[in-house]
Length: 487
Image (cartoon, rainbow, N blue to C red; front, side, top):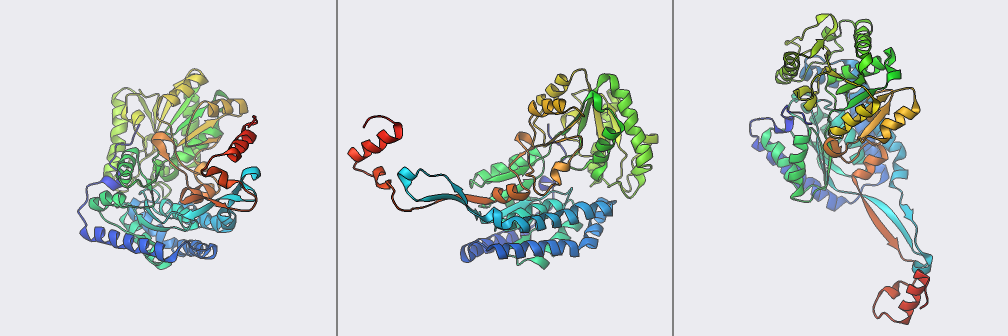
């Protein structure tokens, strides 16, 4: 199940020769700096993380303004929470734990064979990393992963989305304020840059986008055997158990769906609720909308859909569902506003599985509500699709929660809430299968962008020479001792 809206990185744009030249120039400069400078010390890495946190906080108002410019409407409070405080918090967390992350991890050795030798994993920088970031969280999904990359001692070139030109321009300015270009820099451009970026001989690439783009990036990177981390989203389900058809559950699901007006890769894509309780659940959702967020679709809290074309796609999904006979519900018959690109939360009740909104990642304020008769049917329905980036289960029964978690596979999961797995700095975040590969955040991100080099330091009293020819009686004795047999 994939999102069919063309990703920013494959959108048709004017060729930009200057952007290609900038990309190659910065790449060469960073590769030279890696060879000349070696791995940065812990103190240097902490300085980079501090500079990043400082520039994020110092540009808070500009970040708010840029988001409003690109989305038409964007809530300032949410920008502060995620795009500013979230990134700064990740930087401070990484700086606090950097010494323990960088410390060698010692592994067991056989003293009978290796004497006093030591064996350890030493985490070293990979080198120069390419970071392809999306439009929906222009700062969090650029600078958040940058935290992990800098903590691991790398140099980074960021390619932001051209769907958010104001945010991309500000991102480039902020990075230039905080870092020399041979440490971190930003390149912006059109289709040619998007195609060229993953073809370079990076030491690692991170791409956040959709599965179609992820495949293109992975194929291009494979030509140079470049490892990739892919964050690709998908259809994240919320399974509501019979005991959890409550106002509290509706509040969690609706609240998450309203974040960025559904334009979030770990938003709830669809719900699964007991058939007998469908009408109850729908009324709980509508009541929450009326009482908790009245007038949401025309308020400053309702983020605009990123482009008119994206808005039209969402409206087409609803029209197709309506034409199929599915029941459509909104609060007080709220309507989209094309001027601000704001759209109300739209419920689609028990839609057919062949509709586009059930085959594609929705990425907007549409909530299909499917019904099930038995919990095993809900689990099977999830398992029949691609493995999602996030899975949410609502129940007060731990055995039920464990039953769902034990019998499904997803990048992350939450019980009795949604999407918070992406907000915890210490918790590795990523997908599986169609929803992505690899992890970032915290120590998992540090390791993702590090080379775990095995290091052996020879000591005394070993029998290493027994591994070398000639193989004689000493060899036989060592083998006999290892296998517990007669020589």
